[in-house]
Length: 449
Ligand code: PEP
Ligand code: CO
Image (cartoon, rainbow, N blue to C red):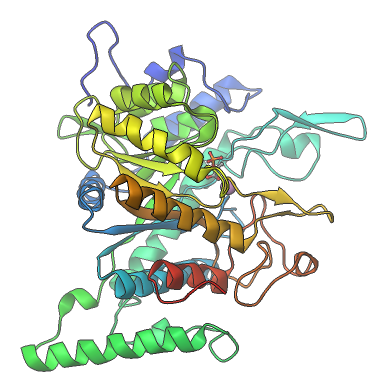
């Protein structure tokens, strides 16, 4: 547990004395308490040893020795927990990490926005249609999307259904990874489904051929297999939004409290108030945590968050995920870097080039333009280089499917293409090909078109 002032002791429910923003209002508190009690007695989704291992990986990235790729859906759905979806998401993250590893010559830490990304912050508590006002949809962990009174009523049972879906997802991921899905000796697992059509296929093929060739070469010299090439570590992450869900899986291990719903929870833009419940909860758990930094955050606020959330300046504990928008980075990021520098804090800087670049098309689609996403990434690399800091990762909303939610990329998707395969429940995601193109650019393996 982080040291806390004696007059302000932390415990897993101490957040309840603070204002909890973005929490649903359950009509039946006894039912909620019962669901939380049941969730509290179920085994944790991840272990404290894994959490500590990720913290060590992030500490390495803070020193410039690794790069983090964090990605997945804006909102996972219970219906989306299918074999196909999990495999495709794992595959695109693996392929991206392979490309980045090859280009940057650094280990890549893979963190999925999965196995628990079921709760969403909303700008309004209610939604009104044709004179009818109902609670907003807050993700499958809370209520259901159809606009009916019954569907929108927050249902405490859904935190148990979310836990189960997360467990099913994780179980399958662990099985795939242990079973050799990530084995570099089997490039067929690494094949692109769209390989024969994609404008990127040739670049990608060249990389996998080179990796296979190098692996064969080193194994011939060594006269034995390189075992590390058979397994890949995967970690999970979600926005730590629903504090009852997080609290129910918070357990004491070796004298520290761990939030064992996930390896890496992050605090979103809308719940980072210093005196709020979310900051109170996350100050007490030992996990590595992310903090989103957007346009509304000022330097004093950030400095105080670092003091409250990492009073001992523990390496690996804090990742700052900046998402300021392509046009604002050069103006806003330097002062944040200076402010952190002034505190002497160890942090990992990663760029979320998605959430500051959302726009709505004339046709009413929420989208993001590939050139703005790349533009924000490039601006972030430039600023960090100028400031002498290390940009150690990216945070992306992506899917392994062939959706049309973001425009641009090698295939030049336009606004007119959005209607074709727009499936996201909330924010627009990069599709498989666009995600891989980002990886090629991160690795310096493809220039801007
Ligand atoms: C998100 O990551 O989906 C999200 C809501 O981000 P932010 O808190 O940065 O707006
Ligand atoms: Co989002």
